[in-house]
Length: 113
Image (cartoon, rainbow, N blue to C red; front, side, top):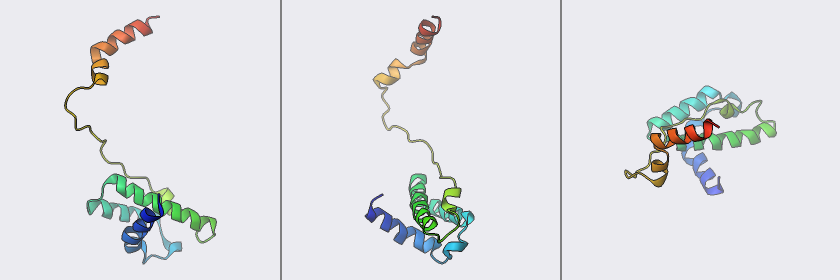
């Protein structure tokens, strides 16, 4: 994470959502609510996980400095969206190589040894 992206995450997302909550009173549920709200606002699952990662890193520093007793962002699971799909519709050489008939033949030749 660069300084600019970290600053943007804090300014645009974390402070508006979590700023009113005292650091020692922040809970995993607060982080989860923030993540759910960001998904509902249209942010991608990847971006929301990036926000959680930034918060987790900041809370790791607070933990090292003795400001908090646990990192609540580390207790929240990252969000996962659907897998990325290729926009290509034409089969690739890889697809042709790994078609079912080719893999069956390969399994017979290598597994029967």
